[in-house]
Image (cartoon, rainbow, N blue to C red; front, side, top):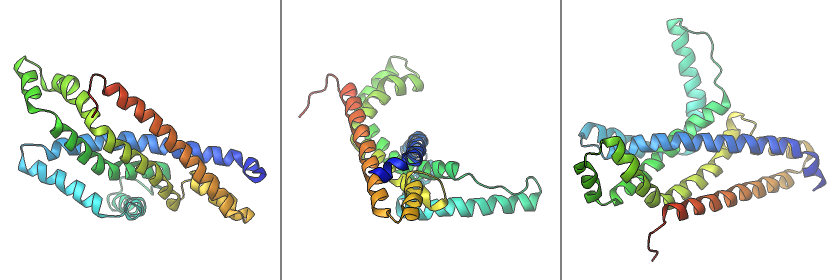
Length: 229
């Protein structure tokens, strides 16, 4: 514990980076998920195929492979384009931005399936009734679809969020100084890797426990008036 206390500052800094990464990735994944869900439910066959291709491809490739592909491959592609066109010089992709984009893109595919299932669970008669009283598509989504979709999606959404939090550890492989990177560096310099990795384990447990409490509160809020089985 004395060693952990001595290195508390870099652990706290790493924890803040991890939390920021997780939250921003979640926001992006929700946006991707909503677009993907409506694409998969679109009456257009072409748009449905694009949505299915997105979710199928992402769920078939390991997150670590996509992380390294987007970070290293994307950076090389941008620099090749810049060199060929002369529009920009050498670009060095920020690890934090690359991590947010990659995790958001990956978990957007899982959120798309979550939201699609939640939307399909809403009785179609309610949507038709909202349209019959003159609601435009934005009002239908805000007043009818969204409140019920949140309730139906929460169990799967909670699972996706907890997996996303754990997946933030992958960004350490591209050099982002997150919790895992900082703890590993401190542990390696002191030959106490187990001690620091155990501290990382405890910190992740605290983050997921707080997340679970918050999402339980959200579930109670959106389940007011619903009869529990």
